[in-house]
Image (cartoon, rainbow, N blue to C red; front, side, top):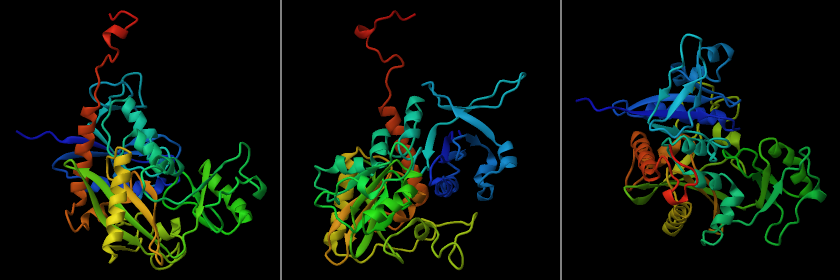
Length: 402
């Protein structure tokens, strides 16, 4: 008897500044899922928020779909009734034929950034009673808000840099130097300024005074309603590690140390190594390994105490938020003094951080094995969270059931 394949719906794209990076991760996952075990299908969310399905979405050359390509795709919506089987409802219909629902077993989320990685899609899938991979709703929401993450971890002992929040004004994008929040004693210029809810190092800058801060805020406020100021870390070195709970045990991946050609690892350095022209530039449609040609040291030669602290603090953050999935935790280090601070968490890291798991010296995982874990965990967590179809206790019912 042939075993029934699990129908995996891979979701990517979305209304996010990291839309294009999400496409790369989604297509990589589609190609890496074991075809003997899974029937994988793409679901692309366009920048305007419209959902599409169609076989051509498997091909990198499809992106970004133009008007003629979109006409060949099927726009769909998620059926949010908590039935036994999650499904998509095609938006196209005719007088003669009712649109046929498209059923799936589990959603594999490959989003990055807003409206996807931040709890929005997770909440929708929970309303639809659909299994999904990665962090749960609460963890996704908190970890995509850098200020909320700092507050949640404040009592854990995990070292963090102090910070100042700057909110987007009700009108316009400008905040004058005089309108900036008062700086506490433990935050002083020069500072690192960044969006509170974005990843991929988008909008990250070094500012030397209040005027420079005011100058860069409009660029941040175009994409985010909150900016954060933190003390700038001298002799900056970054370390990243992924975390997952596998067979009941919290495990960490290989540690990576990104190489950088400038003081800060900005978006262009991270995803377009070599710039937009010349050798090293990534072109649309090119295949990518890991984080799009970012040069990095995997398993760098670092003091054992430093490595142990990074792993211990990463596991602590993961547990504190009720961790699931395989988030990547990022740390900042002063390479001269050895001081280390937890920087941020990526609920869904680029390419799922598969290269970190494959390079693990203890228990390496291939990309397909990592995806197996994410899908299996999603189905298990879904079963755990099931409640009766009528969740109102009999003694709390105010109306008759018919």
